[in-house]
Image 1: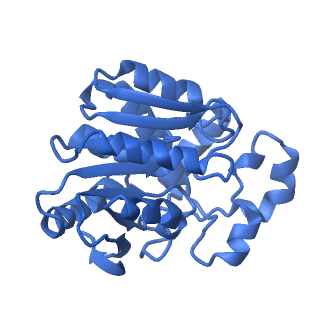
Image 2: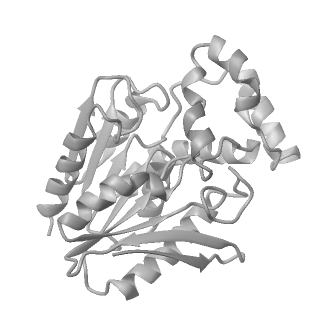
Length: 280
């Protein structure tokens, strides 16, 4: 059964989320999407989970999808964590006594990591997909200083990279950061906008997550591509090496960012389901 709802955030935003529920769920997984996308992009994963009697709860992060908020913006990364905590409270009531898993892709992966580092004993396991601990493209020092300044002076300045897509594509290294043009045309809930504050918060929380790796205490399955063009695989590997928990890596070498890429989504979903099943 599929349903959709809205929860009100602590600062008054209406946050969209949807659920896929089997008749008799034996567990629940919260699916947190990546930057620019939304919960509806995970329907294939959700339907496969339901077939295994695992309920799915998938929010649209503030500023993305059908949730309120300025597109691609947060005042602090903590807002994402507070929103997820409110959803976790709802899940604990709706699916009382069921095991809970957290899944996050890219931005969502970083949200899940930071949340797990702050909240103990709230989940049975964490699944990370290409977590955005660091960008593949190394930002020059002068650009980092400009970002720091603009995040303080004009934090909510909306930046749409699609306006400069021809130039960005010619630059090569930056081209993978452009959202798929076809998806933007055909999916009204996709967005390309970001703000200086959002990017600054993303980068700083990636640094914090790595520095505080010892506080991560959950079993983890991490899926990533060693040639990922968007996030830095070496930093993901470094983070995993620092963890003193039950961990499993599922690494590809095809140059893709999203685990649901047609080239290997069936294998990836099967591995995720098996990993969860072993912990039920």
